[in-house]
Length: 195
Image (cartoon, rainbow, N blue to C red; front, side, top):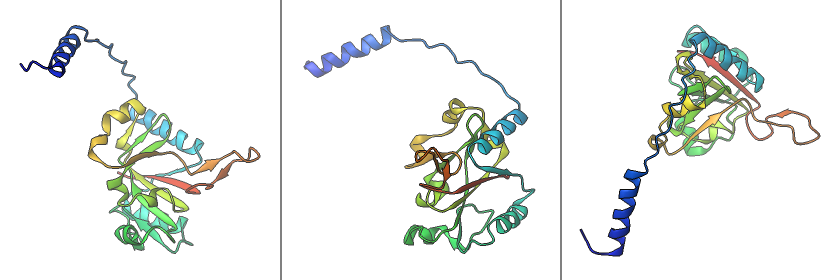
């Protein structure tokens, strides 16, 4: 062992860590059925101003998107199941200006608050996740977890440079206590439960 002050301090600290190790109690596991998680997730999304849809398959989801956003000139999709009118990689090179609808597949949803987890890999480029007027999120019902504790056990922050939880459309009630959607971001958020 080296005989310098840094090595001595490190040695003492290592011995103290081993002696004073804190044992934390296990957190309770509040098991919920899949139906309970789905119902809770749907309720939280609706409470946050979003909408839930259950298309039967990708073709039904594409038809639903077309009917809900018939006026959209530019639909940009990062989800392989639903092609958009503009490639997400083109948005990466030119910016999100003019994108009316962004379609993104989320990795997971959280039942207790209606949030979805999106990473840089899901978005391809970060801006379409927050700037277009309308967001459509594809989410597998099996990817819904009970609470934020469960969510943080499933996400791996070290695997991505960027990730965010998104809940409902943008909203503010600061001015005159009137709720306004789309003040700083998307005016609508629709979740398509699609495996």
